[in-house]
Image 1 (tube, rainbow, N blue to C red):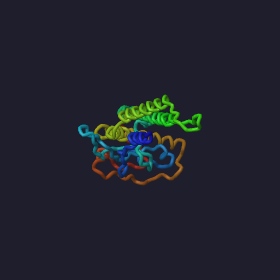
Image 2 (image 1 turned 60 degrees about the horizontal axis):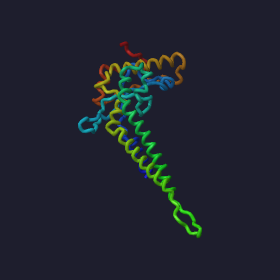
Image 3 (image 1 turned 90 degrees about the vertical axis):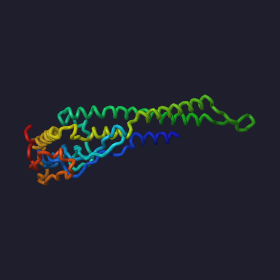
Image 4 (image 1 turned 180 degrees about the vertical axis):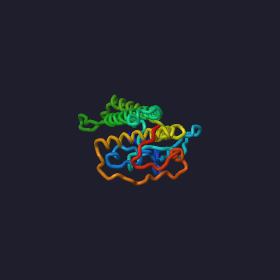
Length: 256
């Protein structure tokens, strides 16, 4: 019984499908690509990314491919935007995204705590219930039952309470639509909400600081790369490409 509850809760909490997918190509920035190993350690790559949009009336979702997300050089896993706030000047865009994911993360944490308590209570109650039944040998040397009624009742009550706590945890846990919505805010810039020019300027300023730090101290520990950036080929990426021209690898961002 306790294994069933644990498995059910684990699936509800962690079993969501990955709703964020990196698409082919990179979104060109005025800073160009990272030039050496020093820059690659902290460089942010901007790439087209698909995400799920929740349809309010049906509580289902559909895939959109007009998003952009940030990645490590050569990475495939999108970086969490709220966590990048300090590196990106704590821009209001990042603050808003942190506010959008906060209710989901709060409910998920509550659900995890309740689920853990529920599993522990079921395990404890089951143990008490089973061990409450026993037998002893009477004066004639014959076995007879020796049940601890108090322990049996306490075990049943504890296990039952554990199931109730676990069910409450499942009820509080965000559903798949809520998770998809939180993922979109956590990982993706949406051109209908986040101004592409402003977002790109944020990333360019960050990468420029990385380049200046490496040029001033760390130095270039491998030859500069002149490989051209492969631009996205999908029409959905158009908002992120407007006004772009192929930047030189070492170019600085244009002044705002």
